[in-house]
Length: 381
Image (tube, rainbow, N blue to C red; front, side, top):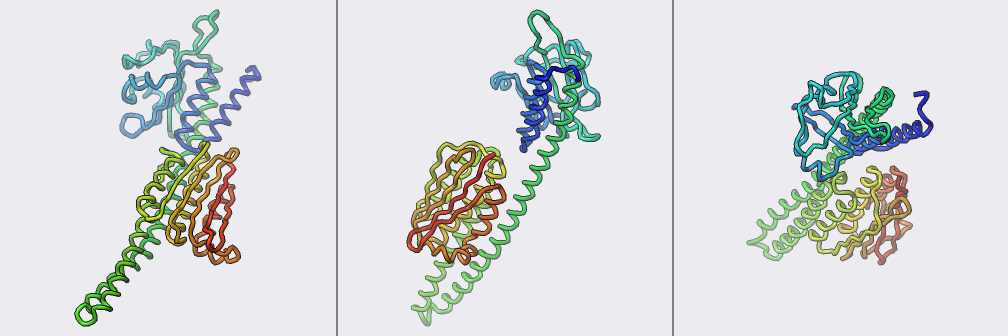
């Protein structure tokens, strides 16, 4: 390592920093593979995460086009040289993988590979992945050169940091899952408290109406009108809960598509018009996207339940490296000097906590008779 050119050390540093900055498991896997291929100047790189059934839970490649990958077919099984990397602790450096006795061939669409370097990615005593490189690029005048001992040492360093990055990403995703579970539990309690009370009142009012039908039809009519009102309130509570409990799918769909889908649901479910407009958005850190989504949900719930307006407009736009979210209704509004009382009623405290928790800020603009605007700005990352 001591004789590696300075530019090479810079490349190592860049690769390690790139891995440490990723939080999502898939992003970490892809960054590891790309970094390994670029760092060791290989034509192909792959990383496999084993499952418990003789296959791979995830298998990420670099250097193979999407068309090639589709043509290759299903994910490989744990066999041959791939299995060796998962069940042995040492690296494998081969001049031609096709001549190794463990080589069992590959699909017809698979690219031709010769020189090979692979090693396990280990977390303590557990092999959590295996990293593979093939076809070392060499200057034309040198012909075939293959992977060197120095390449193996570099890949070993990269694999050690990859194990840390992958473990951290898994812990981060587990933490998010726990947070989502806690949030769903909170919403379940709120749903139980709110809707069960409404349904209990609904049952009592219906019973009263039934008892009054014969002897006091006018009072019975009033009770039935109350039944209709309570049923409408219970339906609103259920709609709001369904939207919040529905998986956000931020990882798959991103903030813009997730928010657009939920707003379309609200627009269909409520008499008020709910619109969404977005401009210039880019991907944000996962924590910020989740906070923006939750604030939008809370503000939409408030506008549709409490504002009395017939229109709610949601905007999401790029602001520097971050984003600006706005939710505006044309309802009754409130007096800013009463913001503490309104804050308790409208959940503004929790929205401010969500904003500040990701380095953002929340602003409330309102006046009696002039509607309300909630703005949340995050700095990006």
